Image 1 (tube, rainbow, N blue to C red):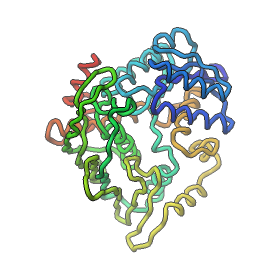
Image 2: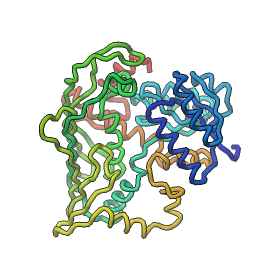
Image 3: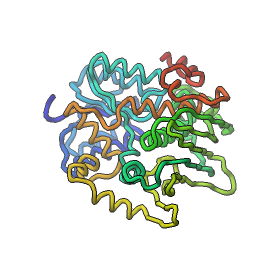
Image 4: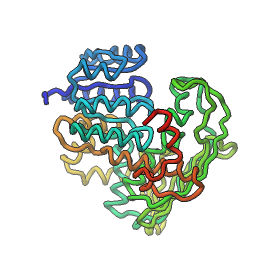
Length: 398
C-alpha cells in the first residue's frame, strides 16, 4: 500500500460533516497519512461543499454521484460510508468487492441481513469493515469503563436505570430529519439511531445481554414527504420502556420518550455492590460526558478527579493509542483508528462484529415489542428472529 492512504467519503451530508471535521483535526495536529481523493453523494451541492472545505487542507478530491462510478475510476484504499442507514450496504458493497476497506456509520447496515451481506463481500476480497462508533472512544467513556472494570469502583454491577423522558420535537420537514421518521430509511427511531450508541456502551462495559423485553408506542401522527420513499406517515417509535437482562446477572431499565409532557426525567444511574455512578450525559451516549461516583459510605468522587487519576496511570504509549495526537473527541479518534488499521493491516478498535452486536441488541427491543415477549439478542444476530426487520429487507430486496 502506498505511504499515503487514498480515502473516499461516501455520503456528504449530516454526520459526514463531523467525520470531515475529524479528518481536519488530524491534519491540523500533524497526522498526514491519508489523502481524501474522492467524495460521493447523489446531491452535487453536498460534494461541492466538501471540495471547498478540503481545498483549505490542500486536498483536491474528485466528485461522484454514484459509488459504482467512483470505484471504477479511482484507485482507493479505503472509504468512509456516511449515507442514511438504508444505503449503508449499497454504498459499502461495491467498495468491498473492489477490495476497498470501509468504515460504516452506525448501524452497520439497516438490518442484520444487510450487515451480513457486507460481511460476505468483505470475506471474498479480504477488505476490512470498521464500525464508526465514536462514543466509547471519548474521554469520559474511557474513564468510566476503566473505573468500573479495571478499578472495580462500584463492585459487581447490580442494576441500572437510564431514563430520558421529555419533550423532544423533531423538525420532520427538514431533509436532515425527514428520513429519520421512517423505518424503511433508518431501520427504526431513536432505539437504533441514537440508541445504538447506548447498546454499544452497555455491551462494552457490562458484557453480553441474555434477553430483553420492550414495549413501545408510535403516536407522531405527521405525514411527511420522505426522501426516496415518498409521502408517508411517520412510523418510528416516540416512546419505549425496556428491561435488559445481562448474562452477568445485571438488570437494566432503559426508557425514552419525546412526548414526556410536563415533568422531565433525564437520569442515568448505575448501581453496584460498593456504590453507584451517576451519568452526566442527558441523552443516550452513555458516559460520554463522564459520571460522578458515590460510594456506599456516602463519599463522593467527582468525574474530574476520576479523569485525573485515569490519565496519571496511562503510559505514554497508551495515551498515544487511545487519544492520538492529544485528541479526545470520539470522531477524530475513530477516523485516526480507521486510517491506521487500513494502513498497518491491524484490526480496528470497533470492528463489524462489535457493530453487529450493538445493532442486534437495539433490534432485539423492536423484535420484542413486535412479538410481545422477551427476545434474545443472539437470536436477532443469527437471523433467527427478524419479524420487525422482514418488511425492510423485502422493500430493499436485501
